Length: 198
Image (cartoon, rainbow, N blue to C red; front, side):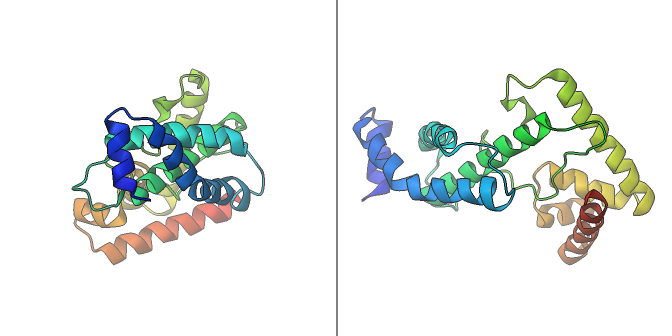
């Protein structure tokens, strides 16, 4: 199956190839669903059929967002976007279950893609209640203050950049530090946060 030929046909409004692309990528989508919603969380926060609907719509958007000059192949690009979408859904589901004494923050953010479909866009969900967003921000500010008291403001800057989707290499360039030092500092905070969270 020639992926790029199918993509071209869809871009030319021949949607008969769309079904072939969906079927071709279904095993990959299933694997991402299992990895994010079953293996990592030990609970199903998104049903498989619901995730398929998200993934199919995302595939259509990716066909028109993808650029041939990018470093990733189309399959790599779609995999990255689908994983980002899965983490969006996971984050949204967890936020619904978030209580005042819990902090819903992930230090395992995925790298932002050069597309509007990236992990961390809180406005992606129209149904998200305003008080949920405010609560999330308040809890994150509280956690940042704790990180500042324990480690210092340099560590907070690194976490802020990471939460925005920057790679550790980009953060090192922004702060004028070595990539290994930034990686060490990030892992140190991550280990500390995981310990207090558990």
